[in-house]
Structures are given as C-alpha cells and as structure tokens.
Image (cartoon, rainbow, N blue to C red; front, side):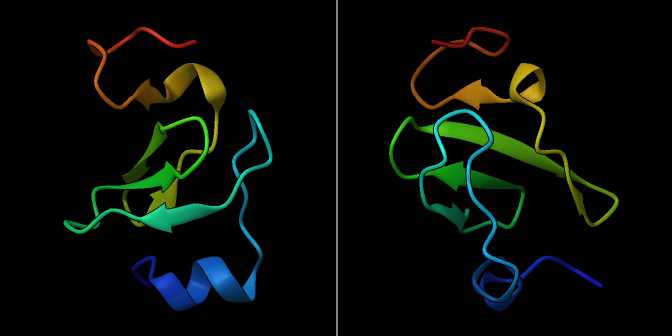
Length: 65
C-alpha cells in the first residue's frame, strides 16, 4: 500500500526530530517536515522515519541540523 496524504493525516505522522507537521512530497519519494525541512525517504512503500536517514532540504545529502 503506497503512502498517501490521507495515510499521513489518519495516522497523525509527525517529524521524529521536531514533532512538526509532515507532508508527502509531490513525487511521493519522501515525507517532508514543514518546520525543520527534513525529508524522510520512503523505501518499498515504508516511510523511514529515522532522523539519521533524513536529509535537510537545501543541504547536501548526509548533513542535518
């Protein structure tokens, strides 16, 4: 079952780093935090909500705040 915006809303998914609101990226490749800009990848239809696996929008991959 692919991750959808409805899934995020129904299960109240939040950013594990800052507890901010998250939304599905337009290309469905990840879940983006609207507050800290972390992007968590989706692998095999499973969101990887591990802070160390996230990238920060606008920074090089592998770097976080």
